[in-house]
Image (tube, rainbow, N blue to C red):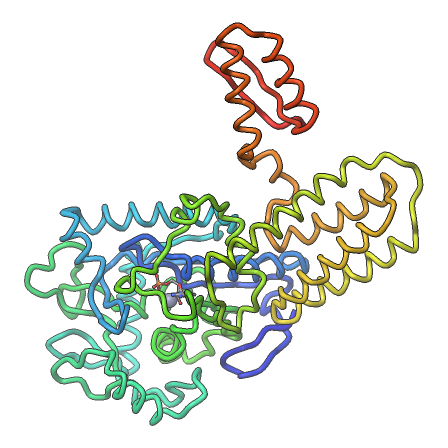
Length: 476
Ligand code: AMP
Ligand code: ZN
């Protein structure tokens, strides 16, 4: 497959380092709060990438970290140690906060049908590896110590800033203008960053002894240490949101390559941001939503997944509830179409029709393999549905389409095969179930049975009265 490599500034064919195997690292969440739908959009796209590679027959080893130690989070341009602050605010330990929000994150991952990475690793479990890497950097002469901590001297790393399409000087100028980085006393270059931060007064939790003093790791070093531990010193794909290009990923490259002397990552993939109503998502604007908020508003998390997939990952996507509603309607039509495919009974098989569908299927997979072009792929899927709706289908024609769509679903992850069983009762059905229950309780069994039959024949819903109360399920 071809992917746009931020480092090469062009689309490139992915050539696995190991035969048929891809090492893929994604920067995981900082677990100090609920992830918002923008964060989750990035994880959906990473999941899509992994699924496409696997569909191509590659084995993907996917590693994702959890930042569960203190670090400065640049949100709304204010750098602060959110995990430590949240623990203070909620009167809990940092560990409790990290475990709780880490759990919520994994819950959202599963609701969105993102496959759990093969390795999920916490920074706090890898302090030893981080200290070892820091020692290497010290040995290679890249570090200096100031009162705030142990810092990486970016002027000593020849290729510093190669990930962004601008010079080192321009990066310096940008950072100065944006002033997003605190400048501790003794800092040599504005781009220098902490590899190890000394514990300040009152910072007692999540601090460790090190050869340089008690403290905790910088954010960038944890990703370098964990990715190299699980994937080797050079690996295939590293991804994250575009905000990580100028600082986090630039610094990961610098310290990994300064330590090993080898190329760190072959392909860097960066996902654009989700905006909301045309603007930024920000807590101060009260426009941040979580997956749970969408559920509370009556959406299925997969409606959001589908909405995200309708856009291309390198273009910004504007979230509105109207757009989500449209995605939901379209997705439900697709589910309805798929369910209906099971109802065709006639004999025969139209070879010409199957050929046409196969062509569209090839185009679908060409599109997803061309830098994850999901808008084109989804358009091909709609074309198949259109073609099918124009035709009088036989059982075999319908099966052929069903298998094609299920194949698409192995990369889209929209639960085409199981959705009908999982979906909630529609409002109409719910009303009927309630009505029937009322008749049953008032011993009007004739009416209760009539509704039971309607539910079975028209909605394929089976009702079972049991000693523990009423149960319902969709007919198999
Ligand atoms: P964080 O927990 O802040 O490191 O964010 C987790 C992931 O979400 C990172 O890969 C970010 O780049 C990404 N991200 C943050 N905000 C957005 C957004 N509005 N849209 C898409 N991705 C985002
Ligand atoms: Zn990272």
